[in-house]
Length: 463
Image (cartoon, rainbow, N blue to C red; front, side):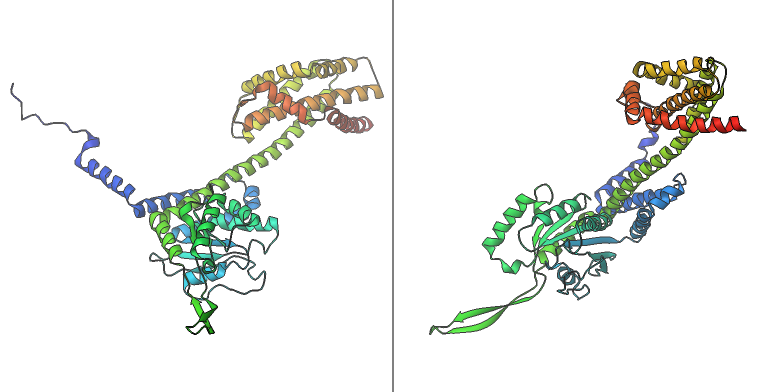
């Protein structure tokens, strides 16, 4: 069999030399931590910028979360300049500031023995880092401020930092362990530093290490438990010579932070920009979630105003309508308009027909769950024909109050359905209606509505 060599072979566009080379380049980038870190940084920056520039966020929500938005702006600036922040936590006197000074190689952080010296977080650039842009941040001692404020500061600083040092100087206390758990909730890489290690002999250090590994299991990686000596110390020792005479002398214990530096470099080399990018993305994600909750809360408040407006309109329409049962038709139309209005608020527009179907579903559940109330509503309509004078006002106000209550229930059920994305969720319509009924004190709602309607009717009759 002969082969026609004149016929050209068709190469799929996805397999041309150019696309194959591009795919190969992308694969190489995924292997390169620096390239991958830069990609993460760009994605995180874009995410933060979109969050800041989202025009759909109401001003009221921005005002309520202004501190969080300020943090996002700071994070965006940090990302764009390639900065990495390392924050240190610990009790007073464990040597936090001394440790940072030892890392910096200069006295930049206060090491005052006065309790409460560090009131706010303080940061210094660590110029030893080859890529630059690395900052060390000191924080108040976890026993320098009250519990709630301590937790707030710890969570806030940890959320903005990229890597954390938690410093202790002995076995971890219950207060320290609680603070460590709060810091760990931010999902930042954390190193547990046991400072003042010169006070322990090798056997004691091994025992302490075993205890700390057990107590921090699931919180700190074993390789992230590091011993340090942040300050040079002098020890007085007694030397006995050959003749049995004792002589007093001094021994200097040098600064020892090499193990900590090595571990820091390992983490920064492996993750570097990715750390800052992922941490910024975590913060942005949390803020986005909080913004969503705030927007939903604002919409809920606006929804309440809309529902109350329609409750008043429907109750007055029912109360002043002299034609029996005709008010029920008008009431249904008012409820339909309310649901259409609510649907626009939630950005899920509905037609009048769709609103009518939703009302049928809600009314069907109401008839099952509260049939006696609807009987009262119809009975009050008939009573309007057989009474006069003040009795008419009382009856009309009662009927209007029941109409108010029914619209309140319909509105809140519809709003919950809309807030859930036009869905009943797992609960279904019956349980949703029941939850709304349980959340309302029917008698109180009807009594308050009745008084308001009677006041309006009296004013109308006098005029």
